[in-house]
Amino acid sequence: MKISLIQMNASPDRAYNLAEAGRLMLKAVQNERPDLIVLPEHFDWTGGTTDEKKAAADLIPGGRAYNMAQRFAAEHGVAIHAGSILESVPGHERIFNTTVVFDANGRQVGTYRKVHLFDITAPDGKRYAESETVAPGNQLLIYELNGFRLACCICYDLRFSRIFDRLAAEKADVFVLPAAFTRQTGKYHWEVLCRARAIEFQTFVVACGQCGSYTTPAGEERQMFGNSMICDPWGQILVRANDKPGVVSARIDRDRLRQVRTWIPMEAHRVDVTAMPLATAKAATPNRRVTDMTF
Image (cartoon, rainbow, N blue to C red; front, top):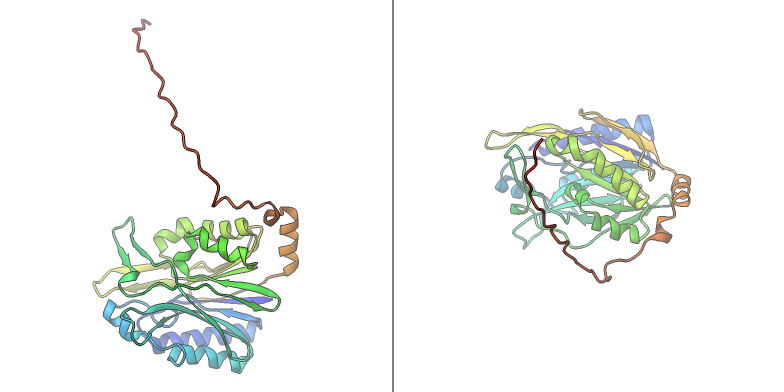
């Protein structure tokens, strides 16, 4: 299966973002002929205040980003993993950060709402408070395409191995991760975590990020890391983007999954330790005598 990643620098301008996503997806279709296109987190709208984010959130189904991705999939006969969209749900005070997957006929396959929300203060003092605007999801999604089982996760989910453990237990072959990693965290953690998840769960990792920067209403410039990549289950990077908008593509192969899982049969060796009793002990501190020493 051939996969194309659409790396973008989205802004608080939905019309621009959707036009840019459409342009890059068309480039992918014309030059790469992929089976699956993956968009980044917040491909439809990035930045702005809490109130502006809520106002920008749209319906699933029926919103502009949803309709654009669905229409493109149907017109070009390509499956689309539509990164994440700001989703508004009537009756909910907060919005959701939601992936939508379309098959090559434009039919909605499923949705996944981001579970782990990015609430941190970075080392440079910048504060990120996703939960002020976004509510967490409470359901996981695996979908089947071209003989592979693809599991959904979004950005900050990458740091939490238990979600990947659960998805791997459900026979996932590919983790698809739309993201908007910051440059500060990404330069140290992005590649390490993507490759680690591929190695420890013997899956492909398809990680599609935002790049460039945007300015917050308070005047802070926030830089994103880019470096979208596809890793194989041995931890090798099959393709990697730079820090500019564009398209990168790679083929994934079921034979590679079988090969790696045969070399190191982790599934057969995996032990459920969750119910094991835990013994704790405290080592004694040695009594050290200090003596006068003459040199």
